[in-house]
Length: 547
Image (cartoon, rainbow, N blue to C red; front, side, top):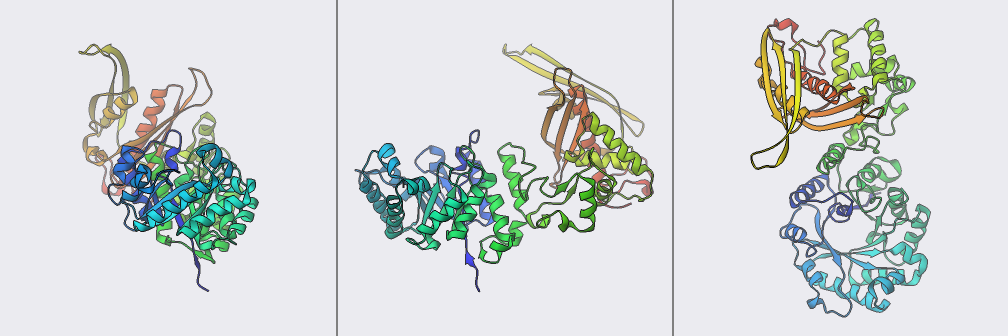
């Protein structure tokens, strides 16, 4: 039997833009639309043309090649003709192939929020849908407050849905606007709507106020809905929307859905999901949720030794899908809960050569636990762990020595009389017997130290020119101004590789410099750089490759 088609509607750029702290620029919206188009969703809702200059400019040109580029807006106002409603006119003139109207489906909201009669509200739906169809647009209608409206006045909610369908809507979308409906209610109500409207014209728009937007969306699909609306990483107003990054792999990989349904997303596109999710978080200047389903750094990770031992024998013992199917990977964290199995698994994954009977493994494990007790967290800093392990096992070259460093912060008035802070750092390094005194200024002591450290590393300078520090996180571990500080630094290079390094100290500058130093050494090592003056046979192998 052929599979039924499910259609995915992304509202990140419209409903997701209502997330507190999120403010998309025009360039952001263009880039996100491209990402969504590449992912393979069927509809990209771009915003509300006419509501603000940015959205109006965004709809001045088509922004997707495959997905339906969709404008969002209200149905026409009651008492105003179609031709005289500026909001409707902006939707009709927008460079989009589809329009998603929104209309009240709860009689209480029609009376209180709109102040019009129930029939006037239905007439606005009819005329707006007709005008959009006449303009050659595919038409959707978001039935706002549908589930609350259904529970309050079943007949009127169904009348709204029926009116939209009979007027020519491709999709009648049932919205759980307040986010309080439960999966069993969703299933019952969608089943009732499917008796009035064919299921292949019903969509679901769920909010996550009870933490069940994904479950509600799946319940709607099981009850007959064939379009799902949601956002990247579940962003949205209040508690967010249904998370498409969770829904998509569930639909494609879980037996009850994969056998029955198909979407526009291929296995190759699914394998880019983790990268897309993390890139989107970077655009929002957010740290990716480590425990996010499917795409989180901890989604396929274990710390317990007994679990690591089982994973080594058969990954299915603790994994519900293959991590590679969504572009993620298996992680066996080395921590204070680690056993020898965790350590061995990580060494093997990283391609670090070792002998299982090597007594240095026990010393390394003891050192790891000692450092974790001091505040290190190597589960979050793979690069620093790899450097530590390789140093214990004797495979990290001595590229250079840092003889000393210092950093100063001066607060003063500049030539214009403005109060400014200026940081200066000096780093003294020794490379193959040659001493370098590097001085640099920065917008803070850490930035100044980073610039000074990488200003001139002699024969290694060409290797680190593409090194870029993209994230810097500080955590105070035990409170107070004398507290121990943990610093995590994320680095990247021109090849797109990313790595995390860690530093811990009672001095935040010292902790930062430790993480900076690891970032530079890891870059040299992963590039296969030979130590200055070394013979060919003592060169360090590239990271991940055995000696």
